[in-house]
Image (cartoon, rainbow over all chains, first blue to last red; front, side, top):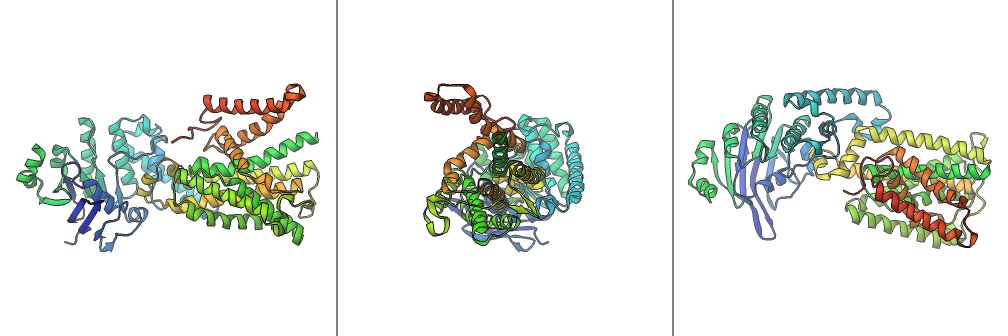
Length: 251
Length: 290
């Protein structure tokens, strides 16, 4: 089967420190791929390269056969590749609602020439997006937080909101950077349940996580990387028992 | 009575300037120190057209908006590639250059001597010459610009501007073309500032470069911040406050030997107090710092 995302022989170094070393991966559509590895293994760098925030030194990235390297981040996002950040990025001084409304793509009211000519269309679209936002919040049981400022939410709730932003943006591929790190077990369950359901909606998930238990619960495919290289890939159970992985996680 | 009308007209001009700058500084978080430059370009374009071509007011205002807008693109595209403090410095440089051109290109701008004798405007047969007429004209323009800004600010486009102010990376990651949005709002703000310039030139009927210095830019920034960055009504209130304050200080009845100096000191102290006890401004939801 053709992979939805094909990362091919990516190199990236920062002033001589190799962050990605001949890294390749083929991600199948509607699958969940986990990435583990010690700090500094290049996991977040990989996300930054895929989403266009960092240019790779060499190598190519294809999404459904389309070359992504060289596109600015917003164009990559418009292809439906949406990410979250390890240091949560949300607009903390604005309500949850505004954060999620921002995420919707192709809003008529984002185009200047529409604002004064199609105000009715914009209003209708805005109401529809508002309704979708409420449904999304409902699905995670945080509907009551709609008008709360993001800064007033718990860390776990903020992680939920950043996941919902990806969904509101109509992501085809979501890149989640530590979606459950530092979150209490109850919320971990809610978030993992949501992630588990994404492939049914045709969404492909790639996630970075240190929580091995969480990884084992959701991933179809697991990659272990160290010093920018892919050390092992395959069935999560198998990768976990790989001697290199055991060694890295025991150290 | 004339004095009162004059104050109201000045407030109107500063409402145009501060509301337009608020879109750039308050919404998008781009600290531009070039607003007086765009204000000045608008004034000079209108004055020169009126004096040399005797062209009608409405044509001049359109020309001023278009030319200033183009200038906005020219300045905005390169300087918006750099961020925060560096952007402020780039706009500061543009402000200085614009002032120098107004001051030194004597054959065009008449340099420091300024351009006197700008005729009163005629709009579709309406001869605007009394203070009352100007006040009506200013009120109309303020109404248009303020409504425009409110609609823009509350639109999904306005939401992108606010999110650019708060977190550019997050905004890009959600597929928003932030470079375009920044240039767009910078150009729109510049165009609006030129409207204030046009009306100022016609109202005073004389312009010279000293009305468009960097101090003027700072004054407009003060209005935006004291009124409340990111809130259009705040800029209106701020403009009224900062224009009336020095005038009101005239009526304190201080001995004339020290009056002028004391007024300056009072003015400064009041501004400092405002920022100390109300850093988000009168109506702003957020303090300006990031």
